[in-house]
Length: 374
Image (tube, rainbow, N blue to C red; front, side, top):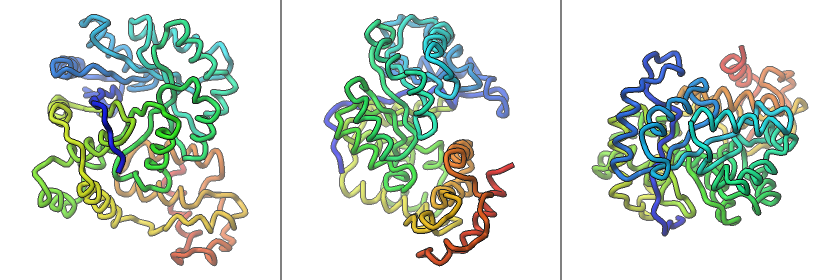
């Protein structure tokens, strides 16, 4: 297990804020959000993470009202992200960044990231020269640190770091004990790459959108028998114990969550090797209820005439059946767009002969298509 010798801070992710209307993300409940900001600052924390897109493009404005207009600029740090999916030309970088600064009411970012770098959006970012733009933004003082928010596998991240590590200060990755050995998210592999290239790591989804606190009763019982620590505490401590991690973001939705998470970091203790093994066991326990028992060997993909990313789709299907997260649909759309959707299956059944788990892959792809495709 990697060690972390630096003090790690809890970051306030402004993407799952309290809402007055659960079906409308733009309806941020400002009174409770302001209370959360005040409590967080009172505990000695200062890192706020937002995005052009969060809460229907209202997160930045809410942060301006709850934080920027009420606290001196030197007392907090703000990280924001350029929306790659809106990039059509080079000048869009400047236009979007100016909009973000205006919404927040600040004249520089503490951290400026290129949002959602993956196999699809890397092409948009490079065509619009976004990497060159953030380098210039840092040189001009519009950003103190720069980097990327990453949402893909190890091979692409290595390409990006090999090409841009001389300008990238920070990589924001999804990292939690559930995804540590996951074949799609690849948290462990992404983490090791960041350490190899010496970049600072910001952790997102340490609790996997609430997944790691909303566990089955049988799993909850094992946590309770192991220690008195809360399940959320375990997830946050796992992320914060990894090498090169400086911030662990949590998208807290109410003051109670805020108080519990602050307590973890005020009295932070790195996980031990035995605790690491216990969490790996819990990850396996959570996965026991998977809808599709795929081993992710990839043999079927090599034989698929339509180039359908079958293991990735099965992983997303399992995740959605267990957790029901909007991110599953977004990740499906990304994978289907860059490869082929599940509905493209021709039912040739060649893949079945290569499946080490003897799964009826064509039939399962029909289930995937029914779930993710309109």
